[in-house]
Length: 325
Image (cartoon, rainbow, N blue to C red; front, side):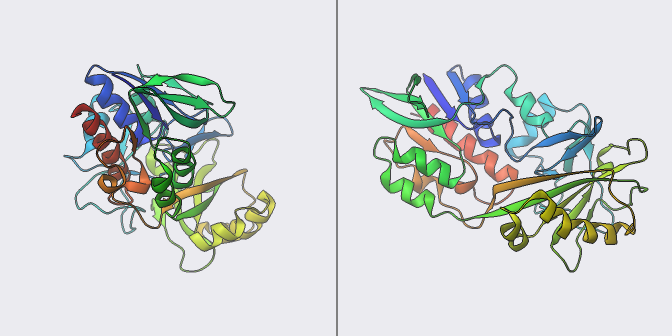
């Protein structure tokens, strides 16, 4: 069988790897130039690696992601220890909190190795063409025909695709109703001795939590330590469309207060924005994908919970549906 997977986040990569391992031909289409979705990292000021999406990966030992981590990306793996502070996103008792010294993109890049991945390509339509499905990009060009299509884009983007797919209108309306919280992140390099904590939650102000990237085996570069300040949902929504200068004006004083460096100007800063950060509610994946449909929806909008492990499980569900057909 030939299968198209739309979206190279974790759900899409899990589905693609499972299907390729079962001997099928798979093409992954990704609208951006990067892989991994929220497992995003950047290099700032040359050598500083900063995770500006998922801060750590919660990996149950018997979960979907555990095998990929062990088999594909065990090198430069770091188990993050955060004495006295809750780690953001922790929800599985006893599950290790993992990161990679080279950045959280280490895992999705390893998962994508050997797959046919087409980046910087936005899919706009899925059309029935006899017994197969035709996938077309936003300029209208056809990118091939497939027996199945797995859509893993965020709710509103997936809904736009379902609007242009066979019998997708009702499912599109359901997906469009899934609400997301936005997230604005400030990445900053500060000339300060890295604190002992990994995650710190200020009691007041716009910042939901701050992560200390040095806790991931990323020592300061030329005496400058890296931090990520993630704004709360309300502050993120208020500042999403504001200028970087406006965001920094709100965040840097609060960050300086936490670090005890009120008079120190950061050596560098970057502002990142996630319009579709975390879902407020979710749909049932089985109900949204009735028997008979060959356009399957996976991803965070149909995950059982907010963790990356939950999102990965939706990709496995889609692969198993196809393999059992």
